Amino acid sequence: LTVCGVAFLNDAYDMFAINIVAMILGFVYYNDAEGAEQNTVPKKWDTLIKIAVQIGCLLGQLVLGRLGDKVGRTTVYSASLMIAIITTIASAFSNSMVKGFNVFVVLFIWRVLLGFGIGGDYPLTATIVSEYCSTANRGKLMAGVFAWQGFGNVLAPIVSIIVTACFMSKIDADVLYLDYVWRIIIGVGCIPGVATLYWRLTMADSARFQNISANTRASSMESIQADEEKLLATETRNTNSITESNNVGAQSPQSMENNRPGHTKTFGQYFSEWRHLKVLLGTSIAWFALDVAFYGINLNSAVVIDAIGFAGDLYQDKPSHFIIRNCLGNIIINILGSVPGYWITVFTIERLGRKTIQLMGFGVLAVLYVILGFAYNQILAKSTGAFIFLFSLAQLFQNFGPNVTTFVIPGEVFPTRFRSTAHGISAAAGKLGAIVAQGGFLQLTNIGGHNAWIDHLLQIFALFMCIGFLATLWIPETKGKSLEEISEE
Image 1 (cartoon, rainbow, N blue to C red):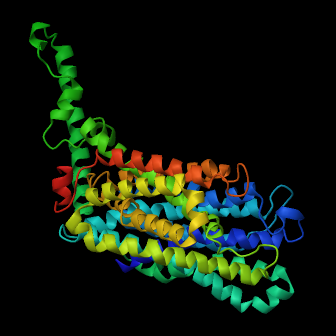
Image 2: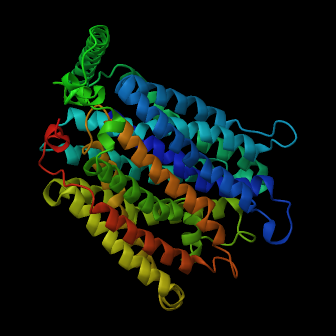
Image 3: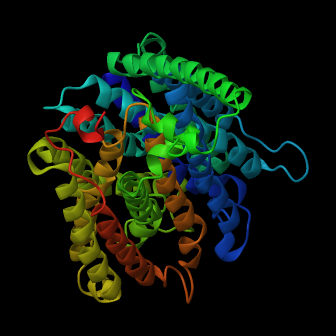
């Protein structure tokens, strides 16, 4: 469980450290720009490097999730970590290569590959933990593993403050020393992975998965034998010139296949039934709706820090002071809302239930985003403290709500033979939401002026919370039920 928890700490660090790195890259590569462009990464490059991991995650969740069912959970789990370690180190050494391949393009490529490795952690961690745990504490332990993501969110700005402080005098004398800082911040992201690699390599698949795999192989052998028997029977009928009357009521090959004792449905056959398909749609749509807002805010925390007046002056402050101040703002935002939210879920999920927490979270978030969206300017004008309180409350209910449960539920509601694949599909839908938010909605932030469209974005996020609430109604409650009882295996 510790190994799985460290995986999410590592993943969160790698994903959200880019907020700080993007800020530092502005000082390194655009310190000599003029006017409003000084010390700021252009929007297209900022978006490119922030969206990279999400693109890679989407692909990794689909591909590695499927391989987790086909090859084995722990084998693919180890491979995903090795991919992440190698690409993290490569990202730290990104530089301009040839004309047209500047540092941002190279960093984008490596971070897409990094995201591919990170993407495997979602379906594989969920399935490994759910299959090892007992019914009584399965939800608590799955939520506890995922809660390490909160520590990763806080660790990134802490590391950034330490590294910046180590170079402070040099940075104040020559801003280009920040080129060392952002590379070290990224490089530190491989340390938790390296520290846990041995234990990932020595993990064994659960007995539940091994039994299902053995039964599936046996079913496949029976299917082959049945096909041979059907072929022999067909040849016999053709040879003996059976009359039409003798064939009335004969079963089709597909019917014989489906009615054969011990028949195991394929992925397509299983999800062709609406009662199963609606669950997959429910987990996927809910995760998509959540991540539009979750990553839309957390990948652009600088916007919120600026809104509450904690960002400092980009042009007048010393670069080291500006960076440290923003990192402190990140820590405060996470400590006030995000981190407590994870652990409230851990200690209540077995009592309240997954579906209840998810519905409550989406409902509260919809109300909070409506308030923040339609009264954004009025709240900031009258009380920054009130804005911080409402925003922190939204962060709290993201994690004491759908951010945790959208991870937990897909690890429980699907059959063992499809669990990793279906979880990967659900998680990939979430990352699609993150891409939509970063590549689409957040490009509208500055319409009408600096951060002038944030209130409308919050209104849009409220709409997506309503969509997530409705999608959750398709999902069954899994509290107190065994995996076999839930999936009718």
